[in-house]
Image (cartoon, rainbow, N blue to C red; front, side, top):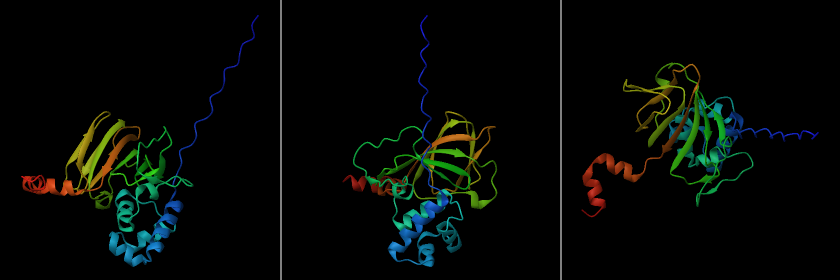
Length: 225
């Protein structure tokens, strides 16, 4: 009788690298000190309150996208550096950037868990992120995020409502997507029983975007028309 051969037990999946509040706070503080700015100077340049910056630097506050993106712009800090895996130095974007499944860098924001992808490269035009929408309701105007650029969201599982500060609400089910101007206040809310998971791509505002919004004459001028 043949002996049964034991099947190899697969190794447990490695946990996703995480940037917690304390780590992000230390990075923000170091970037501000490197520029020689006071809290008041950073608040003036970013539009984020002194209290919020101070608490974030001390690791006492989770930031939402609007605030940490505003701080990144003011500090001239690339997301690849802001949310880099601990011990990994991001390099300038110069070729394909691979992120293996489950190995994006996770940051738990106020109403959204971010898994940032491609953080090993800096200087990218897009910021891809896998997200879990924790918000179930809107508390008030402070829930709306606004930032330069454009945003794309695709629902992987569950259902969400995308609220705009114009009063418009768009329901997205699994497989639905939405592309919009992220300067307009927006907020995601899970409406399914299970927390919705989405993939989003955010771009910074380029000169081409600005020209396109001013109409055809600017584009024609650039093309020599």
